[in-house]
Image (cartoon, rainbow, N blue to C red; front, side, top):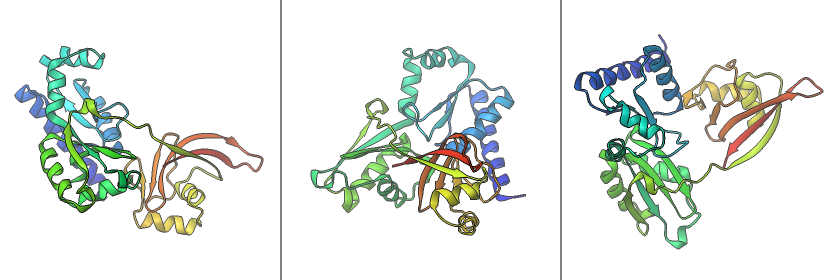
Length: 271
């Protein structure tokens, strides 16, 4: 059995435990933050189990990292209100008790200096698992870090100890106060002979197929947050590709074939 198969079995086993706790205790339960790969895996399992009483929530619309909230039948009406954009004090209070955000406001001399990786690398120094942290929304003058409520005080105090944030204003806020920044992209068009992953990596990175396969073998390639090592894997529209050291890309559209028979592909590079 491969490491990937074991990982999937572990994720689904934890999901089964959460469902059991929700039903036996008759209480709302939640997971840690899930990446794209885990979200899709769990959604398929919930469909298979015919479970409908759940909510995937990341703090704001279109969040990449989300928690799964499972609720018993007695809260179904309240969650339906919330899902239909109506007021539900029970659901809103519960969300506040699960997720908070840290707002970092940089001093003038640091405006525009920090990127997503600067904030993430700082957080990883504190020993928190990535699953404890949601999206990091970066602005020129600071950032919003979405975090599980149980870790928010520790993270805030730890950030204040770092030299890079010594002059910054750091506060804990409710998720409604987050100012979302739309993703920014650079549009790229490439022509590929096939939809094989190694072919795509080669064209995007402007490297040889041999070098692309080395990246795959060294586990530097992620598709939808999942490590991918198979060169022949066929890519699809909507896939999110991360090439360590090269960047993050979205496969936006296969436009059609050019005169040479190659597939013209529109790629969006996150900037």
